[in-house]
Amino acid sequence: MNILITGGTGFIGAALRQSLLEQGHSLVILSREGHADRDHCRFITSLEALSDDYALDAIINLAGASMAGKRWTVAYKEEIVASRIDTTRALVALIRRLEQRPAVLLSASAIGYYGPNGSDRLDENTPVGNCFSSELCDQWEQEASAAQALGVRVCFLRLGVVLDSDGGAMIEMARPFRMGFGNWIGSGQQWLSWIHRDDAVAAMLWLLASDSASGAFNVTAPEPVTSKGFCEAMQRKFRTLLALPMPAFAMRLLVGEMADELLITGQRVVPARLQAAGFTFNYPEIDSALDAIIAD
Image (tube, rainbow, N blue to C red; front, top):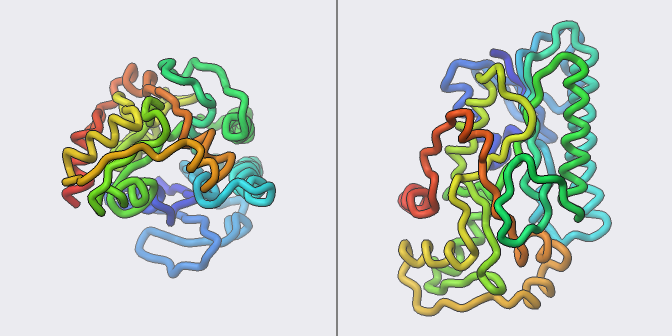
């Protein structure tokens, strides 16, 4: 297949790109920075580089400024929204003008769609929440859903916290443990819905190839873990001298509004639709994932 990827140079996108190339696909990567083309991999800085008669079989949309990249100032929240909504809207416009439209659009979203929900078990039937991240994800999905009217199969990838050794959230999460200190946030009872990056990529490849798959899919491991449970799992991998909570008020001082939506509260999300469809996870629970990640 000839596949267009946005966000193809990021933490998830780079791993996905490598897997697709290994499978023999040809790729077009939309990137803000210029890169030299490689075998079966073309880089573009604008969708205008693709002519109306350019043939695409699929689009995978992973673009978006990091939700945890900076404090959520008004300006940065606008950047977060624009990086997702504008890119997705531009992709739908591309699909509309192409003479041969792609068969499928996989469009990133996030479990932030559900908003904070305590210990409730959340699947794809759970309604949208009522906070900045949930409103963002809902709008993001609505923009992508416009491709359905153009005859394109659309899957929304509601991604959890993606873990691996060389980037993403794991870098900061592991830092205190590598120095001999264990910690959890606040009460430690809030849920962390995570997924190993290999499983996230495998789920995308599976959805790409599954002609009957459409709609929302939670891309999370089957066994979410509490903040304190994650700390205990990390302590089984690292020798820690002391384990203490990071007070909620300290997190609010450090990162502001982001703390309440992403760190202090939690979401117990399960991949009900992936499991019902027969997708198999290589790392269904946190200990097996950490065994692979820490060993790298």
